[in-house]
Image (tube, rainbow, N blue to C red; front, side, top):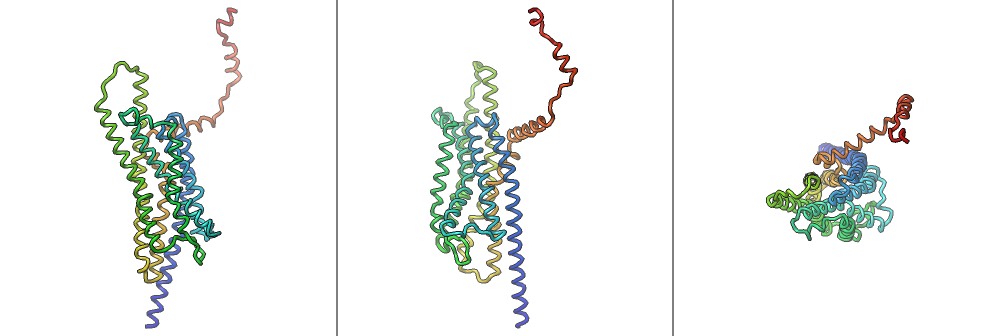
Length: 351
């Protein structure tokens, strides 16, 4: 019996160590992938959304703001989590104040990109409205106040995180166990996992409804010049491309954020029933996987834009064509310069 018990214990220890190793390996691979892909992707997204064909569009401005905040997630949140979980360098345990402030700040910026995308979807809805008063809210002047107000609201909504985070004896920075942990899981489920996708979907459906109504009401106007018609067609094509980008964001955010909130609630509810270290290790592995995957929406938006939008790909290819064009310097041979110098306009000869 003793030999059998020791073999079982040894097997459990080996399994726990394997689970711990798998968790750390996943965190390192995932974080390094997010940092490299996210930095390159957001840099290219910022370039594309600042091009002339998109920069004058309010919806594209919201996508630009989302890319900038996503860059903050890539260069601040992901490295801090990588150092904390992968290399035991924990900036959160410096003091209780830093523990609370950093946890609040990182939770806020992680939620912001998806809510900025909701603003972009709302702008598409406003722009497609038949009411002139409602369409007036789709303006470049509205973008900065709307984004700033969203940042403040999301920050204030997450402020409770700073007061319910404590340093444990390990030391480690963690949320208070019990009721607050369950509340936080439900809070994230509605505000972070379900809120933005529902907002994207709602405004997207309303936009499609407005577009269909406008198509039915369109009467051919022969008074419009060809230039005006071409401008309207380009604007409609841009809006369709932005709608496709919005739909891709909705699907991806739903798939990456919902599992984390659901598992957070589940693990909090069964925390008192976990019997041994092996179950704890398994829960920790799954918890870390679904938690780190939530950063994918803020880090990989560029690749969603590239896959879903022909306009985005066109502007991106324009960047690479320009780069190739600047590599080859323009040289003029002596014969060409001489020939150009001998070519004198007749007006100058008459003088």
